[in-house]
Length: 156
Image 1 (tube, rainbow, N blue to C red):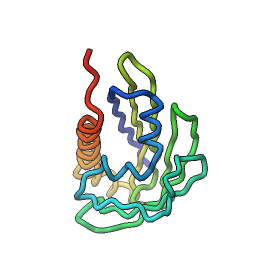
Image 2: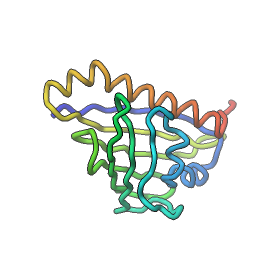
Image 3: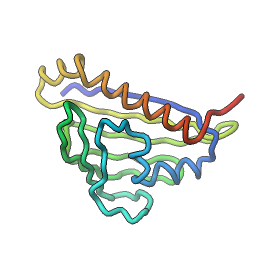
Protein backbone atom coordinates (compact mmCIF):
# COMPACT_ATOMS: atom_id res chain seq x y z
CA UNK A 1 0.00 0.00 0.00
CA UNK A 2 1.47 3.35 -1.09
CA UNK A 3 1.07 5.99 1.66
CA UNK A 4 1.02 9.66 0.66
CA UNK A 5 1.45 12.71 2.89
CA UNK A 6 -0.17 16.10 2.48
CA UNK A 7 1.15 18.85 4.75
CA UNK A 8 -0.14 22.42 5.00
CA UNK A 9 0.73 25.24 7.37
CA UNK A 10 -1.12 28.48 7.87
CA UNK A 11 -0.73 31.30 10.34
CA UNK A 12 -3.87 32.87 11.74
CA UNK A 13 -4.22 36.00 13.94
CA UNK A 14 -6.02 34.16 16.74
CA UNK A 15 -4.89 32.52 19.94
CA UNK A 16 -4.06 28.83 20.18
CA UNK A 17 -7.11 28.49 22.42
CA UNK A 18 -9.29 30.22 19.81
CA UNK A 19 -7.94 27.96 17.09
CA UNK A 20 -8.56 24.94 19.29
CA UNK A 21 -12.13 26.05 20.02
CA UNK A 22 -12.86 26.41 16.29
CA UNK A 23 -11.15 23.26 14.99
CA UNK A 24 -12.13 20.98 17.86
CA UNK A 25 -15.80 21.66 17.14
CA UNK A 26 -16.59 19.26 14.30
CA UNK A 27 -19.60 21.37 13.36
CA UNK A 28 -17.23 24.04 12.01
CA UNK A 29 -15.78 21.68 9.40
CA UNK A 30 -18.60 22.48 6.96
CA UNK A 31 -17.53 26.17 7.04
CA UNK A 32 -14.12 25.30 5.57
CA UNK A 33 -15.13 22.54 3.14
CA UNK A 34 -15.95 23.30 -0.51
CA UNK A 35 -19.74 23.41 -0.99
CA UNK A 36 -19.61 21.04 -3.98
CA UNK A 37 -18.51 18.28 -1.59
CA UNK A 38 -22.02 18.22 -0.09
CA UNK A 39 -20.50 17.85 3.38
CA UNK A 40 -22.88 17.19 6.27
CA UNK A 41 -22.51 15.73 9.74
CA UNK A 42 -24.88 12.87 10.55
CA UNK A 43 -23.81 12.35 14.18
CA UNK A 44 -25.49 14.30 16.98
CA UNK A 45 -22.54 16.23 18.40
CA UNK A 46 -24.23 18.57 20.91
CA UNK A 47 -21.49 21.16 20.31
CA UNK A 48 -19.03 19.20 22.42
CA UNK A 49 -15.31 19.53 21.60
CA UNK A 50 -13.44 16.54 20.26
CA UNK A 51 -12.25 13.90 22.70
CA UNK A 52 -10.25 10.72 22.30
CA UNK A 53 -12.55 7.93 21.10
CA UNK A 54 -15.19 10.28 19.68
CA UNK A 55 -16.86 8.87 16.56
CA UNK A 56 -18.20 11.24 13.90
CA UNK A 57 -20.27 10.18 10.91
CA UNK A 58 -20.47 12.41 7.83
CA UNK A 59 -22.02 12.35 4.38
CA UNK A 60 -19.72 13.64 1.67
CA UNK A 61 -19.53 13.69 -2.13
CA UNK A 62 -15.81 13.29 -2.82
CA UNK A 63 -16.09 12.57 -6.57
CA UNK A 64 -18.69 12.80 -9.31
CA UNK A 65 -21.41 13.96 -6.90
CA UNK A 66 -21.75 10.46 -5.43
CA UNK A 67 -22.75 10.66 -1.76
CA UNK A 68 -21.00 8.34 0.65
CA UNK A 69 -20.70 7.68 4.35
CA UNK A 70 -17.46 8.67 6.10
CA UNK A 71 -16.83 7.72 9.73
CA UNK A 72 -13.85 9.03 11.69
CA UNK A 73 -12.56 8.43 15.18
CA UNK A 74 -10.79 11.17 17.11
CA UNK A 75 -7.50 9.95 18.56
CA UNK A 76 -4.50 11.43 20.33
CA UNK A 77 -6.13 14.57 21.81
CA UNK A 78 -3.80 17.00 23.63
CA UNK A 79 -5.78 20.25 24.00
CA UNK A 80 -5.05 22.94 22.83
CA UNK A 81 -2.11 21.61 20.85
CA UNK A 82 -2.99 18.59 18.71
CA UNK A 83 -5.61 16.05 17.76
CA UNK A 84 -5.91 13.39 15.07
CA UNK A 85 -8.89 12.01 13.23
CA UNK A 86 -8.65 8.56 11.66
CA UNK A 87 -11.02 7.19 9.05
CA UNK A 88 -12.86 4.04 10.09
CA UNK A 89 -15.15 3.91 7.04
CA UNK A 90 -14.83 5.88 3.82
CA UNK A 91 -13.12 6.15 0.47
CA UNK A 92 -9.51 5.70 1.62
CA UNK A 93 -7.56 2.62 2.61
CA UNK A 94 -5.86 4.91 5.16
CA UNK A 95 -6.69 8.44 6.34
CA UNK A 96 -5.03 10.01 9.38
CA UNK A 97 -5.36 13.77 9.70
CA UNK A 98 -3.34 15.45 12.45
CA UNK A 99 -4.17 19.04 13.42
CA UNK A 100 -1.43 20.95 15.30
CA UNK A 101 -1.60 24.43 16.82
CA UNK A 102 1.51 26.33 17.89
CA UNK A 103 1.68 29.84 19.26
CA UNK A 104 3.63 32.25 17.05
CA UNK A 105 4.08 36.00 17.12
CA UNK A 106 0.70 37.55 16.37
CA UNK A 107 -1.33 34.36 16.59
CA UNK A 108 -1.12 30.67 15.92
CA UNK A 109 0.44 28.45 13.28
CA UNK A 110 -1.90 25.68 12.29
CA UNK A 111 -0.44 22.58 10.65
CA UNK A 112 -2.49 19.95 8.87
CA UNK A 113 -0.75 16.68 8.13
CA UNK A 114 -2.70 13.99 6.32
CA UNK A 115 -1.34 10.50 5.76
CA UNK A 116 -3.51 8.65 3.28
CA UNK A 117 -3.58 5.67 0.97
CA UNK A 118 -6.00 4.56 -1.69
CA UNK A 119 -7.51 1.12 -2.16
CA UNK A 120 -7.22 -0.98 -5.34
CA UNK A 121 -3.44 -1.24 -5.67
CA UNK A 122 -2.12 0.10 -8.99
CA UNK A 123 -5.58 1.45 -9.90
CA UNK A 124 -5.54 3.52 -6.72
CA UNK A 125 -2.07 4.84 -7.51
CA UNK A 126 -3.25 5.72 -11.03
CA UNK A 127 -6.34 7.49 -9.60
CA UNK A 128 -4.06 9.40 -7.22
CA UNK A 129 -2.03 10.82 -10.10
CA UNK A 130 -5.05 11.60 -12.28
CA UNK A 131 -7.60 12.85 -9.74
CA UNK A 132 -7.11 12.44 -6.01
CA UNK A 133 -3.89 14.43 -5.50
CA UNK A 134 -5.37 17.47 -7.27
CA UNK A 135 -8.74 17.12 -5.54
CA UNK A 136 -7.08 17.15 -2.11
CA UNK A 137 -5.02 20.18 -3.13
CA UNK A 138 -8.24 22.00 -4.15
CA UNK A 139 -9.94 21.09 -0.86
CA UNK A 140 -7.05 22.39 1.24
CA UNK A 141 -6.67 25.50 -0.96
CA UNK A 142 -10.35 26.24 -0.30
CA UNK A 143 -9.77 25.66 3.40
CA UNK A 144 -6.87 28.14 3.44
CA UNK A 145 -8.98 30.82 1.76
CA UNK A 146 -12.00 30.15 4.00
CA UNK A 147 -9.86 30.46 7.15
CA UNK A 148 -8.38 33.75 5.90
CA UNK A 149 -11.92 35.08 5.34
CA UNK A 150 -13.00 33.96 8.81
CA UNK A 151 -9.93 35.07 10.79
CA UNK A 152 -7.73 37.25 8.56
CA UNK A 153 -3.97 36.99 8.15
CA UNK A 154 -1.07 37.74 10.46
CA UNK A 155 0.48 41.07 9.46
CA UNK A 156 4.17 41.22 10.22
